[in-house]
Length: 636
Image (cartoon, rainbow, N blue to C red; front, side, top):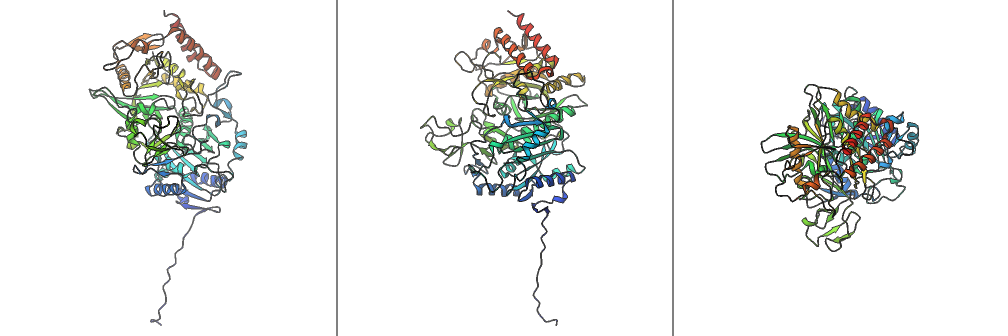
């Protein structure tokens, strides 16, 4: 029998993990931390996807997702660059939607302040858990039918840093997955940091378009604008976003987690989560100082964070362009800050090699462009690049219209809120400490907004309390980053009006309370205004790289130099203390404080703050308002 040939048969057994009837396409579900397993199982049962894909952050994963998005037509490769892609959204899904953004807590005034009767509160929108349950029950069951559920483990801040926090996002959008890989640190390493049931922020996102589609999908961009909701549950550290794919609504690590939820965590734990850039300024002597600066969206945070100084001998390095998490060191008392993000999600229109060359260089590869135009040779284009693009260049606009540059000035290539999404590590001036787990020490905090009238170039606060007041009265002309249209000067205290996840009065008091600990080394606080206009509606200050002149003055003030004069609204630069070499500017107009304007402005500010916050407005802010009125009244 030994010589009988018996064919050899190799048998393979493939074991597919399942959650109920739903297969786990990639990843080992049972190796995940128990708390994560339990939550994902609940999400799968609720959303009923066709499969579960557990992301690991690898390059192979990125290539696979990119290929699928190209195949579907959601992304188009920009042939002019390495690994750059463009996408166009449904025209109804182009910006953050503040009117559909909610905070849910058992007690209303944990979320929003006690605004005065008849006032339209714009400091957050609260909904009761019972009412929100009805809204979500109408949307979430089966919302991912026919789609993959992607599980994205991510860290806000360097993985393992004591200043960082962990999130897990589930989404049915692989565009979101690709963007989250740029904006956060996505890695399977995250799971080892959750082994002992540590807290993580739960993020659920759905485009709200289960298959088969009930309505036509525009631009291969599934969304459900009529039913869009962005919901925050700060008490249980959870975010639910439904119906929108736009970054500010769907990349839940960004404003939702990094500001609204993290802000509440910071309130509970005694730190700051702020809408701020972080940068360093090194003077010709080699002395380096770090500053944090807060501006409303599209007011120049990214431009300032990546400044190209016009004064010789100065060096700028960028740590972050949008969000700062800051904590006073218990040993040294220093305020230390990290950038919780890993990428830049910048407004494209207006960005060019003159206004922000570093941003342009950062997004030359490995980037995603949303709602910008495309040139015939496979390049990106938006308003602001006209001087860098030959006239007659054929452009395909974000709405699908072809035209030649320069032939019709009414044609627009891009949405005003078009975005670039690029890795921070590619920035030519990224700071070597941008991922330092200990953060960087902050010497000054700067606030600013677009104030076309009345407000001087730079003001230094008299002290911490006055600085908190300056931030509380922050105003700015509106921008394209939210759904407001038309230019009007709106209140935006701390540049956080759309982003505070709890009672705004308590948020301001939280800032004031840091003065109570004598160990805290409180940074000086400043207010800047690059946008003041003359009588001909021309900017009085050149801005951009010349802003180094103001930053230099600020840094010298943190060193204690005697270069400031007292004014009714704060400390102003002494004449000649800001280097104006090579500039033709009207110093007196730039620094003037029109008494009638300021008296009117402080009355309007007081009414707005009191209407919005009622008895939640801290008494110290009321006292600061009275002091400013008195100082103004005493001036000639």
